[in-house]
Image (cartoon, rainbow, N blue to C red):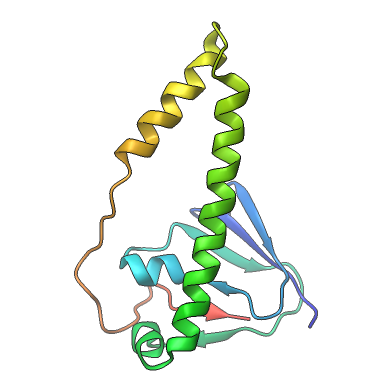
Length: 134
């Protein structure tokens, strides 16, 4: 499959953070699972074929294999981020200058993260995009 999608934080003017070019890639799953407005914008970087799932919660309930694939994808992303944060912490933990604060900031961030799942929605709307697969 050819084509590339680019993800940016917030709007299309936000900080770019991901290039999606893997066949079968999934995006929008965090917004669906956490029942939040999307925190990223995905735009085509070339011609792509995208399949939108209009009722993603129903789809994930009805397709346990797809739900497991999304769970594995999310776990892999979290694992990669955790490994990165551990590496950053180890690099700056013994510093006495302003970079030494990174260790404490990451500790505080890790302790302050609490799941905030809202009430379940049943229909997609323009302000809450559907989950997509490629």
